[in-house]
Image (tube, rainbow, N blue to C red; front, side):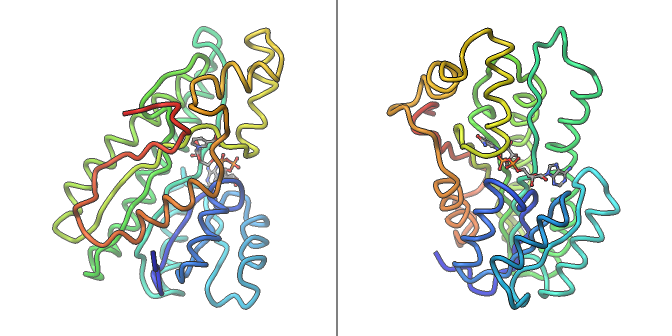
Amino acid sequence: MSLTDKVAVVTGAASGIGKDIAKQFLAAGAKVAIADLNIDAANATAAEFDPSGARAMGVAMDVTNEDQVNAGIEAVAAKFGGIDVLVSNAGIQIVAPIQDFAFADWKKLLAIHLDGAFLTTKACLKHMYAQGRGGSVIYMGSVHSKEASKLKAPYVTAKHGLIGLAKVVAKEGAEHGVRSNVICPGFVRTPLVDKQIPEQAKELGISEDDVIHKVMLADTVDGEFTTVDDVAQTAVFLAGFPTNALTGQSIVVSHGWFMQ
Ligand code: NAD
């Protein structure tokens, strides 16, 4: 799927899934903004993928901060000439049973996943609508957009919420040729998941090996982790899909952990 000269913003792109999406978007011909809270890592990623600086840029952005989101999106549009693709991917995980979940942690997680998705969408739609060349908005959901797990109340709540947002963007964006979809990965070995393995082992009183095989991968068809490459290929496909035929959908990429 060619993304030749499309301008893409990927949030949380200094690590994990977002980083591989940025890499594959560049390989497909896009110009890519690597937006992240961690600006040093974002700049390093941009320099690693495109030493010339002509097609990749790091952008300092806390997705929960409206001013930073608006300034970052404006800077990308000014450098690359508009915005064609948004991947709202930045996210964190905090695990605890509800009775012990700190209210501050609940609010922090919802802010990054939901406020971040809303603010980046609002800032990018403004450009997509004005440009008149359509666009693609992709949210990083999860199997937890469809299923629940113990210890993940705000994460499951937020990931379900993204499907609602995507459906509204699909309806409002249609007349402008803007499509909106959600990717729902299973477990992917990134820093976000590596951190959870010992935390879940402690909370559930089981070994780390049991967290991997009896909790994370128990319901997959083959006991395998989903990879960043699997998710990035799906993002390239959705970013480049040319019509409103594929909009308002959520695509599960999880080794069959969840089947629709
Ligand atoms: P990761 O920890 O490797 O990367 C997350 C990135 O987001 C980091 O670079 C971090 O600096 C950035 N970030 C965090 N808070 C931010 C903020 N407020 N503003 C801007 N950037 C911020 O995690 P990952 O596993 O690559 O996760 C990426 C997305 O994929 C998340 O939305 C996550 O929920 C989702 N996801 C991950 C998995 C998995 O198994 N890893 C599965 C399903 C969905």
